[in-house]
Image 1: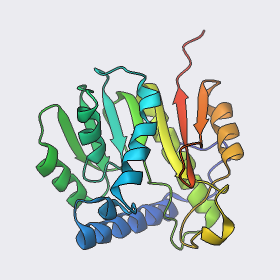
Image 2: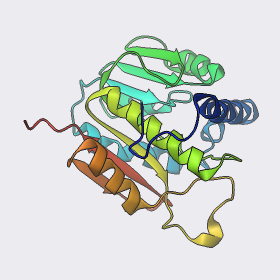
Image 3: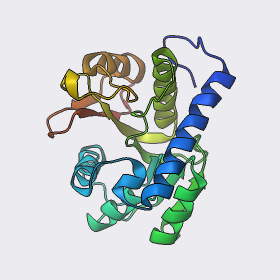
Length: 221
């Protein structure tokens, strides 16, 4: 993994970022259980709306395999099954308790649940929802590198395309929280176009203070 801006931070520094993420979401799971609050969303309606944006990536391919990086308790799997998607679903999360809940709720039939942040099994499509938002006390430059590196992971773990969402700087300044990370939509679009090719779409029209990026792997020679 690497970002096109280089790697000014050491592996140990980035490990600290991951430990903070793990601790934060583990505490949310303890506090709220396998609910939208347990993955730090403010309700089921917005949670479902975020899921729905990823259907643009899947484009009706109901047999495609899906990899969910930062899957939490596996709610995207539930959503996909309700929408008629039946391909193999693999969920990764750095919080062991999240994976235990996902396995308990959704079972192992047609699903695989893994603890970690670096997938070893590629899928047709890879997604990540919400994992770039909670920066905490991490320096902005280090968090941005973490985001870019993780997007590289999504790219490498998918054969047809990938998607992710992130909070937007287009949100009202007085509604932003100091511990959260907000990205510039134009800069993120430019980064993805430079790094992953021309088949990139940015969705920011679904009523939340965030955007979703969809990237399809170019097949042209």
